Length: 106
Image (cartoon, rainbow, N blue to C red):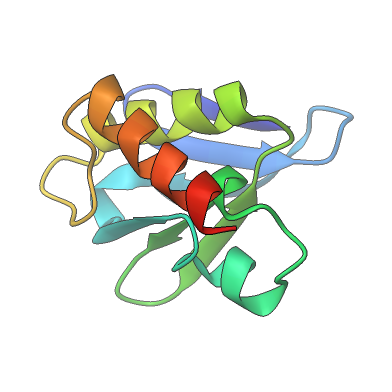
């Protein structure tokens, strides 16, 4: 599971609901979506429009979503919560355009 916790943290873990890791979103310096995300670069079999990376000063956190709408929801929500981070999407429209371009490149 992956969830956003108040006030601005991302938590994830196994299906039993116990939080395994947590990231304070104020630490996020960059959001990388698509073919430049580490998950997409490492495994070319993954659909790049379902991959994103959150980069902090110390490490990166890579995510692969199971469907397009989940990815859209997470990346847009994170764009709003990670104020000042590079790679933020200002609107749903800008995200959809980027996703369409990624699908055309495959």
